[in-house]
Length: 138
Image (cartoon, rainbow, N blue to C red; front, side):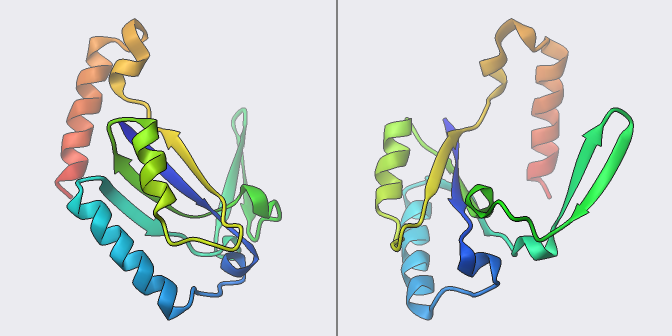
């Protein structure tokens, strides 16, 4: 199963304050462990919401909202995409992460085509497989 591990934003990440060198070193070591174990598929940090935009959809209308966004407890500072055998395995790996200071991290399972059962027609399953293959070549 694939899971997205979502690192929540805090006042420092929203202010554009980068972590100290020590945390970068610890995180680099942790990420290497994830890669060696075949767990990590992707990992990225995100810029502060002051550099972002939101698009609100209402019927045919599209409204662009400039950051920063105020609901900091709901904002994302970064993420990993992991391939694990179970949610329990994901939790055990996350417990090893070099976070402290009240950092909150969420783990969510990624939908796979088979999760949709009969609702996902074969042509859409084939399309998804084709698009994944094309995207992985870039």
